[in-house]
Image (tube, rainbow, N blue to C red; front, side, top):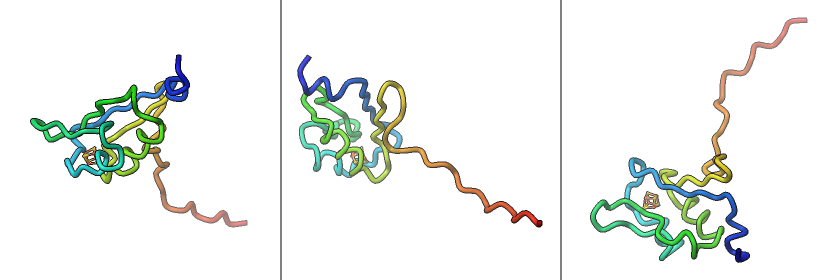
Length: 94
Ligand code: SF4
């Protein structure tokens, strides 16, 4: 196993086609890694093996609709899921 593969151990990257608006941000920051399909106009990850971890994340971070999801060992690592905010609890009377 090469160092490159080793650093990507457990990573899985997928693109939600419903969220992709085809604006080519991912393909600009990681050309040849992410490509927009001519027919579907949806981005695809075409070179996972050749991509660095930095390129994979750069594409995901550049996406304004968070269509690119990165998981490691089945756990989502990007975009992070934020805890919902609720109203501040009432102060406790003493
Ligand atoms: S940056 Fe996001 S919305 Fe734009 S082409 Fe890539 S995956 Fe689609």
